[in-house]
Image 1: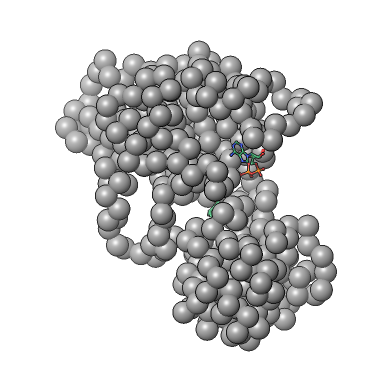
Image 2 (image 1 turned 120 degrees about the vertical axis):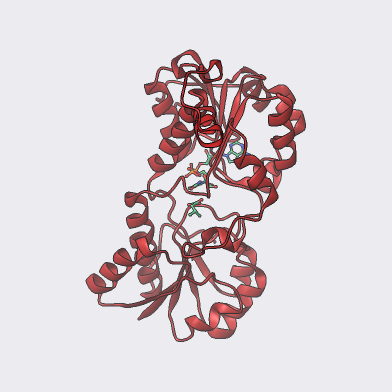
Length: 331
Ligand code: NAD
Ligand code: COI
């Protein structure tokens, strides 16, 4: 048996090498992004471990078919970038890692909320841009315990976020397209997303990107939000209309934003060895705002996550290549 992992960062390598040794299986790895052009590197392999937010397209799965590769085990949760029908049409089985560490992403959402409500961006701006180090009225923050937090999506990550915000004393409300029945968690579902949007001081997104939530947070939504409210997006960039968000932040329709996932992420975002400067005009604009915290899709990035992403993905590949059924199969 032989596997290859694409888009590998240096922090993943020890886990890949350990898994290969423990399982006596040859696992090659490359920093390259998986595309029809780079698939040649996988020739002779029984399966591929992938981690990217750019599309896994029909062309790619046709190339899998050409090379006789039948398994793609993602090292991540989201499958919104995978053409699952094309994978099926080309006899490629896909797995993901649905719960490598939901608490890592939930903690990051809370980190963003604290950074924004305690105006840390304003303090950093005063020091870094003006080299001034003194009190300012701009630094007056708010307590999480005095706020209503709206969680959109009460799945694995959303439920962890609810617990963390409750731990800080917030009132938590939630909206889910498919609400959990008999949840033991201490929160109320709102009857509609609009209700959550109008009532919340902090809105944190934890749903997958789907066809029906593309740009769901847009000019109309920002008008509904309190002008003191902040939006946190660690879910997917496509859910938020970036132009409308920039307008809402500049015009004072909302007070701040924590953005870990941006629209149209490129392969460059995941090139951990790159020394290229950022060119995305929206990212640059948002990064200059003191009421914004923008990060390169890194909410997942903890040691626990990395270990589980690598290990579970490779376990899934091994099971598939051995002809076993895998619970994490997504197509
Ligand atoms: P999950 O499947 O456990 O939960 C998703 C929840 O969203 C479910 O309860 C579902 O019913 C609900 N939902 C689906 N469509 C909805 C909609 N249109 N409106 C409201 N709710 C909706 O998934 P999870 O593990 O909690 O992950 C959620 C998302 O977080 C992933 O799909 C992924 O896009 C994102 N994510 C981001 C990072 C990161 O590093 N930033 C890491 C992991 C996952
Ligand atoms: C996911 O697991 O879905 C993420 O968003 C993490 C990212 C490294 C792709």
